[in-house]
Picture 1 (cartoon, helix red, strand yellow):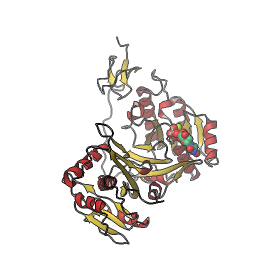
Picture 2 (cartoon, helix red, strand yellow; picture 1 turned 90 degrees about the vertical axis):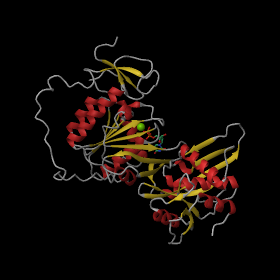
Picture 3 (cartoon, rainbow, N blue to C red; picture 1 turned 45 degrees about the horizontal axis):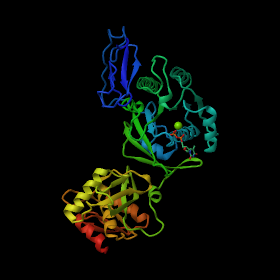
Length: 455
Ligand code: TYD
Ligand code: MG
């Protein structure tokens, strides 16, 4: 029997049940339901607050008060992903794997904002003040007037934030906070929701920008931060492949800006360095381009980014050939392989296929289809693409190469980095030192790769 007021929340999907069960009916996960006490049944209003409101007051779309200026933190890569600085009174969730560098990034953001005159607080629930201080010292930011505190009690934090006026507050992390109004442990769905709710309310009421850190695993299996995504104004993801120093900040949701913008950083001894020109970073510019490599001229957010696609097509040692992809969509690879076979007569069905996007970047653009296909064909025929050639274009199931967005910007960036040729949709126009090798059909592009015709 459930105790009075007890509910069972799935730690994987956040669904709430009134009875304990072995399997969550919401997401099908096993042993994820955990008892959480609520003071009243979910959804009910507090007694006494139900009666006699004054009713809604409606307003027009045009006569709003002008928005206050954004807080420009001075960490440009961060500001750009936020949509040009942090909006006062907004709540931002920064998610990412443990150890990816969330604390480092936000300490840097708070310190730079403070140096520019914003009143900033950094509240750590995970590290002692001493630890945060020594990190700031290592990053050369010890002089920044950031107000530090180590605290996990939500009540103490809220009281502290009400006492002083702040522009920007970092809470590291939302999973360590606990509210004495709930009996569930820190990190549970109930606690995370309650803490986020209170902090978002504080942000709106006092015009403070609040940045919450949330640990998420790659698969997003820790429910905590996911259940508050709808409460906050922006959700940013901080990503990085293990073994690479590059870190990418991505907007997953943003009520005040575009979500396709990325910020690129490099983790070093003195914290995160901003990477203003990502193309130079992701490209292997030294040495000959090997067979199986194709440079994709992509667009990430508002910026063109050049990145190398690497493919390896090898005889399969087992009955079932392997397909492994890093940094690209495996479904998209399957499609490109099918089109190569059906429209170009290039059958790779009995071979192992590996595809890798260099540098740890994740590419989601359909414009990368042709780069992947060129890399695959290059490896299959053991013919390297010219050193000075970039590739872009979307492939349709019928084997056509389609035009993509902002082709001029892609060509311009490639020219800037010393490329002279582009294997691209027929609509792309050369110029500025770039010659566009138009391909209407994938078969034409594959023939160029196999025969080495690039004029
Ligand atoms: P951290 O910001 O603590 O990660 P998170 O808050 O996301 O868990 O950063 C963790 C890693 O970053 C740690 O393994 C050490 C590394 N690091 C550096 O390489 N250089 C630095 O200057 C700092 C501060 C951290
Ligand atoms: Mg941390």
